[in-house]
Image (cartoon, rainbow, N blue to C red; front, top):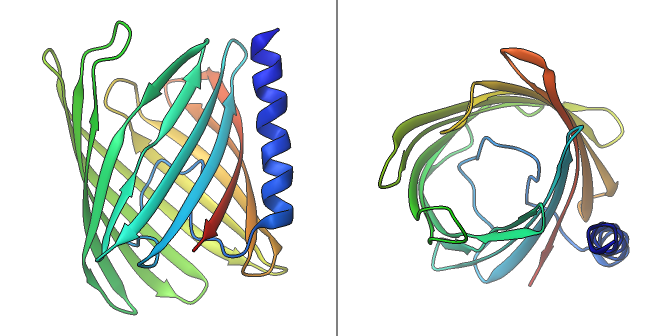
Length: 218
């Protein structure tokens, strides 16, 4: 009962954000980060929900940028368990054709999980005004596990304020996965919604769908 109430509240928040949103920068549902951050002295918040046959996960990620550093606190909720992470991100180079940044995330010990560190280097290639390629190389570390992660996403702008992306990535503790993401600007340059479908490369049985929304405010 509690879980259904939480989900209903989540969608109610999405609807309110659509009505109140001003500017959109965040990219919910993506596992591949880009080289950009929120504009200085502004904040953003992104919502995302993914659902499989056996489980669903809700994610909320507020972030603010000051002096060209972005601090975010992603929170995830699954199986009545909440996990919180602290992340900082800084862009090192940006041009009209290319950008590169670095980020570090720390998840303290929560519930039965050990604390972990994650380092990531996202790079973005702006091939054309309609086509963008994002790549990530990362490192994940706990007391018992050390693993390299990677991700690549190709995003293409479509007519009528739409976009579509194909993403291929390798999480730290799971096989490589692929995901298709569709985005729509509900209000031009103000708010966007995202839908996704993904699956495990090694097993077509493990698949999921996702819904996301992003909002920026100053």
